[in-house]
Image (cartoon, rainbow, N blue to C red):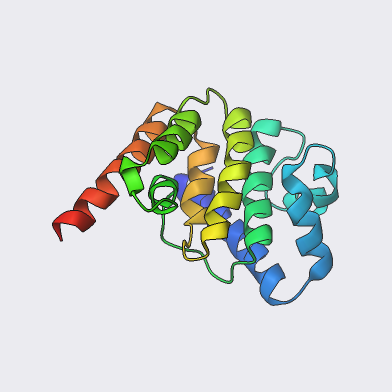
Length: 169
């Protein structure tokens, strides 16, 4: 499968979930909200199976995590804010805030995609509570599917660099 096809799958999935929300497909949205909970995840499989082999957790979990996050946030379009930037934006002091740094460090300490998906759940709740942060779910899904040291470095770079560029503007 080519990189373009993989990227299109990410984009198509995010669009699919957003369409379920905008079309008020309450059953699908409810099932997708449960996708990030191991006890109820199976309820979302009919939607996830269109995009990924649900038998492979390393493939399924990124889609389940992102699908659930989108459904819970009730977003109507993909955003532009990357996860590192979003964490910093949750706090008044941005990258200088100890809590923000702790959240980023915890995310960067994750060794597996399974672990990072678990750590993201409460971060999504925090980000949603701020109400003005529009996550780039397509990019985040891609990061989760290919989670490695390069992804971690980019998240850290986004956390620290974003506010320096704004401060110098």
